[in-house]
Image (cartoon, rainbow over all chains, first blue to last red; front, side, top):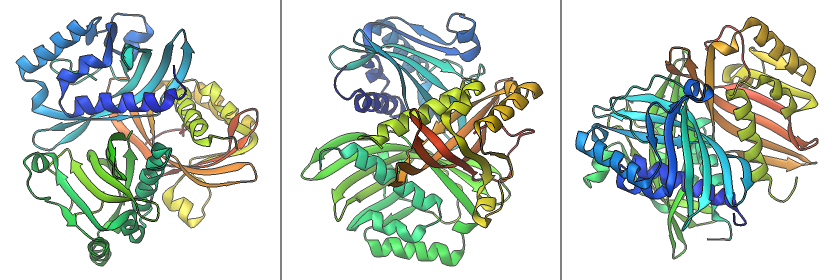
Length: 155
Length: 155
Length: 155
């Protein structure tokens, strides 16, 4: 890690959230190393060591497939999302990898203008250098096990 | 811009939100250069290049007029607001001006204690030095085109 | 205060929120000096100078007692919470103490997965060095005077 990891962490998290909220899903896989680990799970599953229920990918190719599936199903476009990413806690920094935990909240905005709290939780991240700071792992642990969605979208 | 724009950006955004949430509307115009550009619009209007629907001002005088109108109508006092401002993304930095995009969420608190999600969106800002860091432009792009308000309030 | 108070402020706020959201209530008193001042109040009470309605403690022992009471009543475990802590504003820095104000939003997640906006407000903090940065005072001023809770939980 370089001299000021927190500024880079902030930038990475801000750019990640912007890409999703701007509906630039095609840019999303490039935030990860290849191979990588991305999963969306609930706090109950995570605590019990159960496999991720909502989404799992271990390569950029799998992330790209997920984006293609969302585009084909035309699911993502029916509403928009707004991520509010909280203060990151740096848990560990060793062997060139940074372990962090960052809370988030996502609001969903329906086509007719209605807004609701879509998800809250925390990102459990392992960050590494790979032509810039990337997610080697991003485990999305949702606080609620009831996510109101037909097809899992990236969080 | 000076050595550490991000700390100053954070401070400016924090102070701006505090002024609005503390009902110190009279302090609000001083966050802008004069002339300036302030508008509140929806993501649909913004994408189509349509004029701002909810509020438009291009000078401190117009911002002051808006505050006077809100005070006269006694609208603002009927509820309070809480801004949560997210991580800023610095998009460009040239000719002494900083282009940034910052997500926000605003909760409205009614007199009887009820709370609701009032607005989410992003600030598209151009910042410049003018006796301190100021907003030369602040375009407030709301995610929802349905803002539940009788008279537009500053966001 | 040392060279970069803002990074330490961010870390302290992130760790505080994590402890509560991870249900590590027993770690909570250690975020405070001893003696200290911790209270939860509403904006109306705070403005009128009335005593804190929801919680008051002036020592780590009182904070520990509160945790014990919550554990005994088995209240805290019935739901979980997610804090989103906003940008801190540093109001003053003198005699080794830092006065700050920081907005927050707390979402409550019920056992059945439902989520609601539980509280918004601001932390009015006095921070001091005491084997690391600690809260000498943390006044939690809730925006709403209607907090939907049987027994006050730490915020």
